[in-house]
Image 1 (cartoon, rainbow, N blue to C red):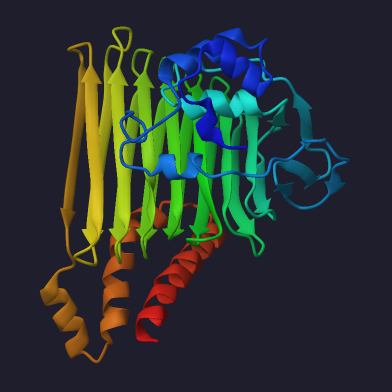
Image 2 (cartoon, rainbow, N blue to C red; image 1 turned 30 degrees about the vertical axis):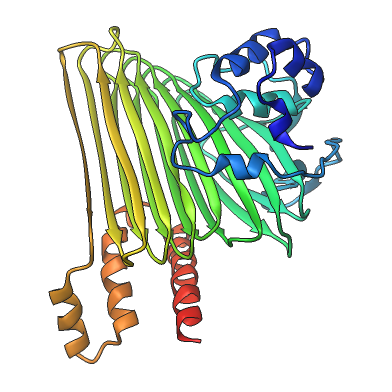
Length: 397
């Protein structure tokens, strides 16, 4: 399959090509937004066109018997195992976010015959492991996550791959957070440049008096973009944190919209970006406050450190406000490591590489240390160390 063949088609032609004629509203929305290019809003800083020009093998998604394991394990878009008693099943997606800004959100739904639905019971801690084993393949799937009212659940998301190359992963979550509840979602991912590229398109609906906490820790190289839309009801709170450590010629980051729809809703979004080599980091983020969202509090900030003169940060924090009764702020800074601090550490016998790492991790720790689970903190720091030393070992060799 070559995704470029979907360009410049009518909604009817898209339906025929995707064998999805019955999904009229989704097709119309995809047609209206258009197959993405660099000229589009969501993908202006990301090389989506090169990914769409390539021919991929496709998969047939046949549900299999789910075996028992400690974690939810999804291999190439199919659930293979899960904890005992976990409610996981396949169904046609019943609720689509028809106001999402990302065309690939709709394409993702059209490409799959069903979604993976996960119902989280009680105050659960759930780990989802995504594993990819196919080269030169389009791997596409969608996950629906729902929790219960008055409960506080946490989802940890990690990614693994075998010795693969050239694949494209299109996946994402439709998350519906029940009123008076909390859902924390923590994603950690390290990409290698040749393994696979990934585009993750998420929709998070946050109910009345509910809390959504979404944190992503992205390391390494390669091509990867997450597109996040979070919608807040009355008295809802949304918190988003993004840590990037990129090396090589990586092109990765976050494009987001946080939409305040209910009164007294609050949000905070923080991005820390560390760019080495010729990497490009992306933080293209909008906070939108609707007419109905009086007394909103919304804060957004992006900070970037460039470790190489070739590195580039595309930072665009934005506010779109339709009321006067609110408290809002946004900002962005980009700089380099403090040479005086580097000199001081090296004068104490610390190598240049270790001195750089110490300053970088101090910069990143404001996000890492907010992760309450100490085991997850250690896993994030280990992933960071691996990405950091991999680059410097290559430079030394």
